[in-house]
Amino acid sequence: MVKALIFDVFGTCVDWRTSVAAEVAAAGLAVDPLAFADAWRGEYQPAMERIRAGARGYVPLDDLHLENLHIISGRFGVEVDETLNSAWERLDPWPDVVAGLQSLREHVLIAPCSNGSIGLMARLARHARFPWDCILGADIARDFKPVPDVYRASCAVLGLATDEVMIVAAHNDDLAAARDAGLRTAFVPRPLEYGPDQAIDLTPQSDWDIVAGDFIELAERVAQQAV
Image 1 (tube, one colour):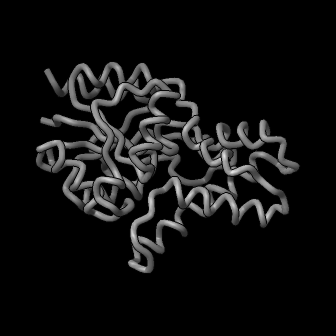
Image 2 (cartoon, rainbow, N blue to C red):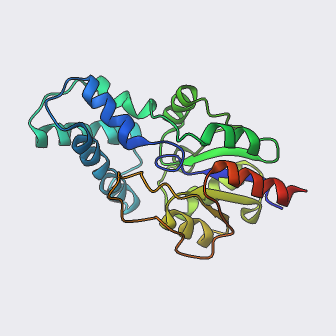
Image 3 (cartoon, rainbow, N blue to C red):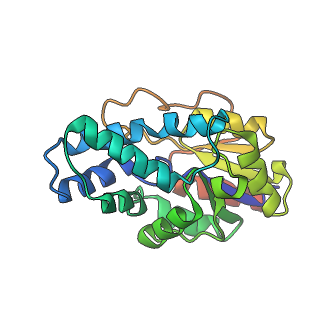
């Protein structure tokens, strides 16, 4: 039986794109807010890949986000206040997430398994009202998903075998890496994560253990298995 669910956060639990764009607009930058948000997020994987590849020691995502902010502001030709970096702590949840997490918590442990730091995830949880039992992820393993140790370390600190833990994500590649590490998997699509023209992760690309339309349906499926 699955005893814990761990969650990808950016995109799966929160709408980072419109949330960051709103913060960019509020900062009064002379840019297209959505384009700026997309470009900022576009530096996310390349920055982490240098660490995953061993070209750089572990650096929390907060610091990478700030470095990327300077890269993007130079590209757009604008000056930014570094406090804009805290936008990643104020991302709004998708409408089904908080109620779904509350229902899930009645049956299993729940925690984020994010590339975000513990501090970032804690402050984001306060903003979004996420009822986590604890916070797991990159800071625990000192590395970034999809490195297998990130998933396995989250299971280990819970004192659970990998097959007792299910990861929930809107990204097929995240689920594939977690399954290779021994975890169970649940796919919940977020077809607007990248906006109305999104072309990836619209459907499950493998036979994941659970495929649910939203967190409410996911909670119902988990509750059925817990009986």
